[in-house]
Length: 319
Image (cartoon, rainbow, N blue to C red; front, side):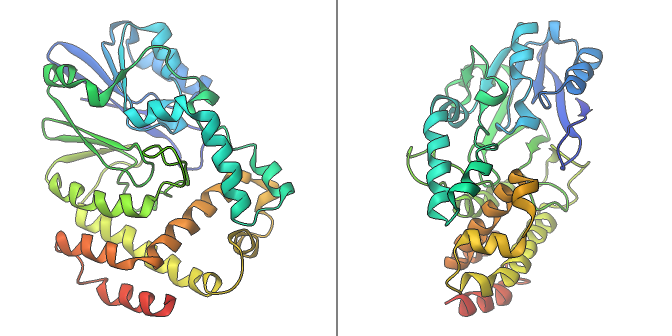
């Protein structure tokens, strides 16, 4: 296994992509972002002419951005989750959803016009592969390479963890001491409405526990010390931020008004930041509306004791 650290222009910093030799095949997990620096890194450090397979963990630009470059310069078979394929196929419907969603959250027409700069957060923006395999329909490839996978949505709805020997290529599913924002998006499962990242995260918690003895290969930073510690860190941040948000959510303010109150100048400077924070507020609102879902998930994996009373207190306050 080789870890490649690729520069990105994004606040999250460099991204790690992973190269494996599996049963005589060279396999790459993720590509890095769609930048000249990332392309130069790959050209200088990975022999893409000999690349046999490319697997994508999820379709955020720092992870899939050079998928077309890999396709055009290698013979690699490219494999993506069925939800990422749907994301590409329904990109126009997705953009329309985002516009309508921001409108329903109280965003003004002027604000929505500013937000439109971030709406093409789909593969169309950075080019999708022309030819690809669907992960969920590729059991023969996975078997031949000795790869298994877990669907672990929450940060996005298509997050995949790939399992190879004692490794878990986990990308952004779990990151050391980072609260990776669950991003607002169109529900690709039903092709209507908003995807509930909060419910998905609760369903992912036991999956993480089931592979906790593996060596995690995250997309950012360097290692995962303990799955229990990282889940509790993430839940602790949820509780902390929900406590700060609670008075505003109990008022008659729209989500847009809450965003403007908390980040008064950000819309004109950085619409993507507003997208992230709106996503976070919706995630925390879903949590406050049904905290029992998280409590049950934590109880199932035996790590609820430290936070149960804090969550109960939030539930009483919100109700």
